[in-house]
Length: 133
Image (cartoon, rainbow, N blue to C red):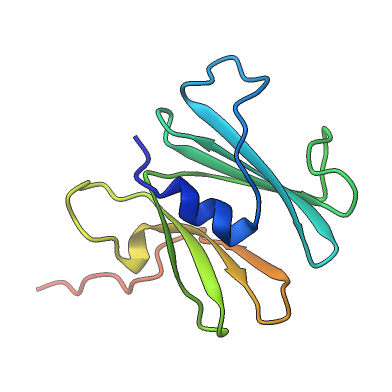
């Protein structure tokens, strides 16, 4: 199950989620929004623990948008961005009771001061490996 605050995410992207058109509306919800000349779609699967961000200059819902990033996710948080705005961070935390670390980060979506969004996937561990004894 994904732990998140839906209202915070809607505020971050300035949109509203919809469950229309999904085979399992109890799992999936989607939000469409625009920023910096691109149209985005964020699909969240609460029970399936997944998030998919799609973006395109014209239509993020087409079969082959300009980009699509998917990740396993069980925690979405809004936080401060290093660039001065806010960031939406997608984590997969193995121990659900633990605080997330940078090793758990899967995707970051940052709102820059000029209103554009900066999306960057995390493809590997960002923490240094533990030293051997």
